[in-house]
Length: 148
Image (cartoon, rainbow, N blue to C red; front, side):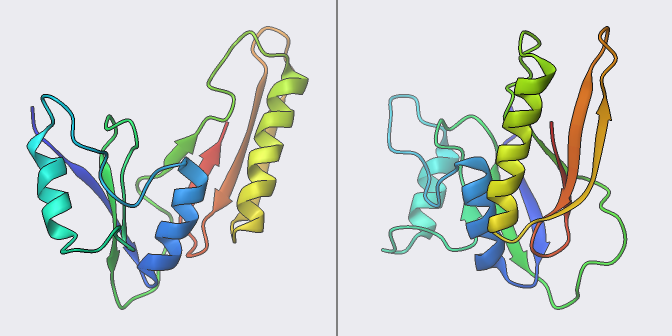
């Protein structure tokens, strides 16, 4: 298995880390020690250097997803993302009604807008055979992501 992290360029890494911490429910320090722990958690804990948490990194509290690092860069974002995150407050549960899905997605969007996100557009199709509803947003530095 190859360990990997997702690195996101940022003008203000701390601000983006704070935004995405709220958006994902992730934590700013590696998960705690457990039997059979992957070596990279110990590696990251060693890099804390006595601090309680990072200001520019996030970790899946379950220890399953990759680490996120918000890397300081001098230039602003230019153009459309070639990679983006999709958030699923609906848990992709097909048993939910279209109304309930819209309610969950809109509630998450409102939470993220309060943290500095911007809604770019909404897509809705009420076809009973294949209903669809999602939002395209931008984080505080303009990186696109979707909520579905």
